[in-house]
Image (tube, rainbow, N blue to C red; front, side, top):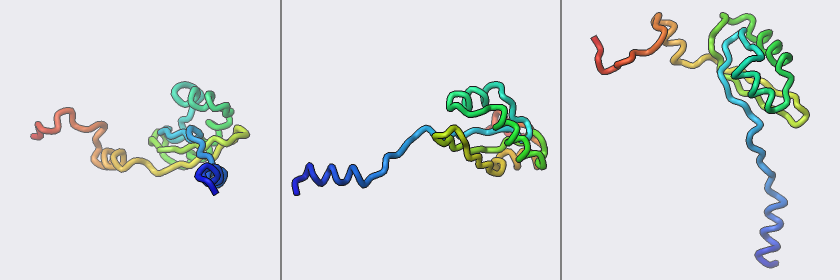
Length: 111
């Protein structure tokens, strides 16, 4: 078998990887709205924005409102989605426990 024949066989075996169907974003718990920046991200992919916001807010209704949650939204070809909600970032939890709203502006200048 020639090299060309082997290459053609390999192309048939390898599945095509489709990039761009996963949205990674941080959404405040219980505060998903159809406005920017979430609305345009979902609208570009053809998702029902109102249904997504309602679903997200229902899933996060037991959490304290406003905690930024890292989310992964996998968009399927039939315009449905799989929503994965992760726990808050460690930096957010540390700042919340310390009672700090933001990090130091000049970290070298500690007093």
